[in-house]
Length: 150
Image 1 (cartoon, one colour):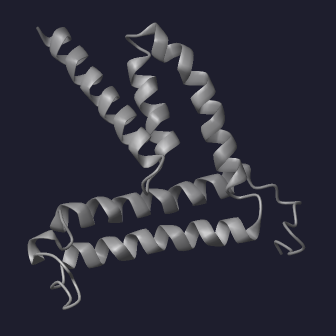
Image 2: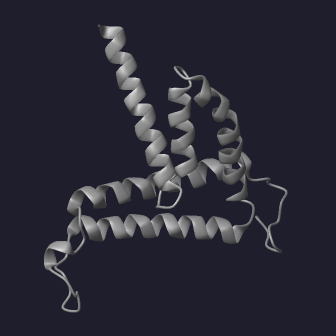
């Protein structure tokens, strides 16, 4: 019984990560990383997931390296991550709907503190990924669009 519960739990986790990763490809968040993690979990049980694991891993690593190729990209990534955290804080606080809001106040900042918390966590994960990518993929000899790293 324990083995069956573990298998079901891992399958649910894998599918949640895959679906979340697909959503995060267009929403704020580490989409390729979550997709890779979900496929890694599912690859323990499914051959189709194992076949797709390596291409997703390669694309995730390539995207991580491209994200820190130049200083403008690094600055934009950090700024975007901080913006997501800031939006999450505003969402978590839940200010009153402004007077210009055209529909019911119930539709203002749907999700409340739960949505704000996930935005804050997504921004923190994004910042951590920028730091990780910078430390692991940034070529110290590269100057990046005419600017010096020094």
